[in-house]
Image 1 (spheres, rainbow, N blue to C red):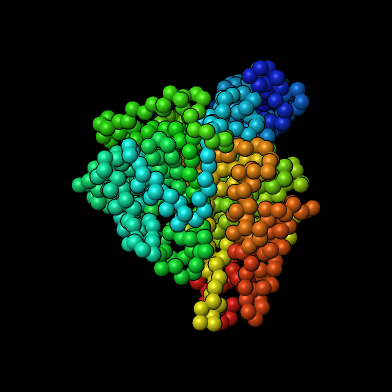
Image 2 (image 1 turned 60 degrees about the horizontal axis):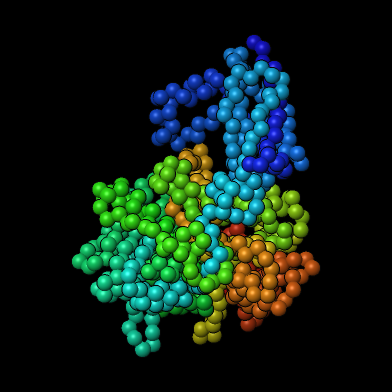
Length: 611
């Protein structure tokens, strides 16, 4: 049998105005007709829904990048087809972003290709979807973008909880809240003069004075949730509680609150006592269960509040349609002053609200807005990328970072993550991701010219005994070149950004994506009162123990300060009277806290080391 004569494919990628798009990755993929016939069989399709086996019926033939005129040409060998039955292969073209991390467009399938080089018609892609800083969700216009905002960073949960309670107490119309977990005995605020305030009591009081309080909670079949507990505690009040049913490998993970349409919060942590903490991160904190936690939330005023409320309203109405026979739907219309041009608030900061939306909920495909924001910002990075995140397991993000580092040898990545993520399987996956970037040991984190991964630790003395414990990082934040930042609820894992890719070959179906929300700050200008730079300085002062607000970027980049601080902390912890500056140490691949410290050549004899 003869193989197909086809051995290449070529064409052009243009923007919506017919101008060439340079630097995009173009991949030719193929599949045998006989394979498609088998995989299109209804019985095989049914088995794919339940089988842990990954059915792969397509493969890459070759790839190229578009040149200055938008042209690409991909060559490959006909032997790649393995065409044992003599049928001609199906071929299609996939266009990806410049870092090869995200699919931008896929052509229709070309069947029975006879040409030696298949010439493809021009492919048009909106320029702002392919390149730039802003989230456009596949189009040309900025999505959920306003310019009249006030943004308040709320570091660690004592701060955000006090602010939330204040906003609830002064609300006179409505309070909308979503939470991943919400324990009925959660004590939100503490005072030396007054008893501790339970969050359920704060919300009940608001309802009693006529405020419309609505709550959406995640509800799972397998993972424990608090929906039933909270529904029971509010059943005799005016507070209305509804569940987002997440019965697959996704969750309603977004945590937001809107008060009267004037203030909105994107909240880092669940309402559970183990997450309550101060910026001191004391090892022994009576108001907190478990070890220290670091997190970041944000309060918004201005036009962006409308887009946070839109998220709640869409979710509430989806739930109402699915499980409440359309009863109690919200008819949401922003005030006239907020339509198109933003609100009448006199803030000055630009804000984008980006979401991850579970496919099959609001629409068939869902949304990938948060991931789009990340992949565009990584592609634009020139000096540094700073990451603070609970997880680091998303394969698309790792690919983007790796290719960005390869393309720009001056670019640096500084990351604060957990050595022991609270999902046990994530540690192995995380370290596979670190290896792909070239980090295999703590020495790499200390000496790599472009990459440093660090962890946070709390220390103290009690009865002449030194105590040390990891600070669990629950943040979901990134900063690029002091020009762009994001913070919110989305982790750098598969389910928060794209789909569950940590279980590839078992459960990597595309609809496994959480409901998430992030605030994007595309300030895109360096000035004396840069909000993004202020955010970075505040966080770095806590972690490094250094006021860097007046420090210029070192000749070798910001990574130099992090690596040197970590080296000095290793030395100072090895002294007779151990101490630490700030909170950071380099990432260790060991499992237990004591072994992680000893991996860094720190002797822990006589110390009290907490897990």
